[in-house]
Image (cartoon, rainbow, N blue to C red; front, top):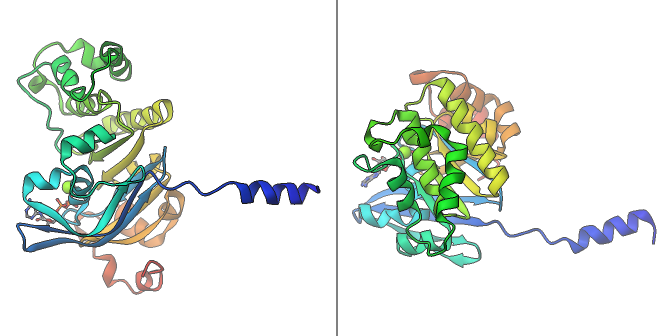
Length: 279
Ligand SMILES: Nc1ncnc2c1ncn2[C@@H]1O[C@H](COP(=O)(O)OP(=O)(O)O)[C@@H](O)[C@H]1O
Ligand SMILES: [Mg+2]
């Protein structure tokens, strides 16, 4: 066999692996009437960090809650489409069952329990587990976040950065296959953002945990993600590799350029319309 033929054959023998998570054309409605997601699709490959970006109100948190099942606690429902995780449909499944299947959401605003200690918060993260490795995993979390070990008081007294670290640490305690992170950079100083994102990258590399990262801070998210999706008004309007998105002129202008409140909608852009390869 020639080298080329061998290469050909080896390529043919390698099937494209199914993504760990597929969200297919979902619609989400709150309170039976408020349509928030309008045909949203995205994929997250096993072991990847994928960023979901967009302005406030675009529907990013709703997307994460649809995946984790937490929508139910807010009177929201997936009314169309499907969500497939690790080969099985999970839309409509209760949130605790979804945790057991291996998805853990780190909520926006951290949601740690402020009148418990860090250690108690970490133990809570392991609520689905019956194995004996919980103590060694607490040590693992302390290795990533040494400051948490030093702060023995109530979690409510931790700084914003420390609370974010605790929220991520608590997710790790569930030993999830996938973590959904909702705006981990929110309220943190630029230096802390850098620190938290570098640990996110490390966790992904060391533990192989797949991460879907929701952010308004596109720059920080694209510095660790391999792929990104940009959403507006309940839909994905652009997606690509992190590199493609960083180089895209519209993304630069609207999401990386510090345009702040001057930011217009992607939809109003002629150049953007030309690039709408996703429609
Ligand atoms: N529990 C809820 N009930 C009704 N509407 C909601 C609820 N949560 C979010 N929304 C609406 O859905 C839209 C998207 O919200 P959200 O998913 O939080 O966006 P993002 O996370 O991108 O800022 C907003 O218009 C918001 O007002
Ligand atoms: Mg949000």
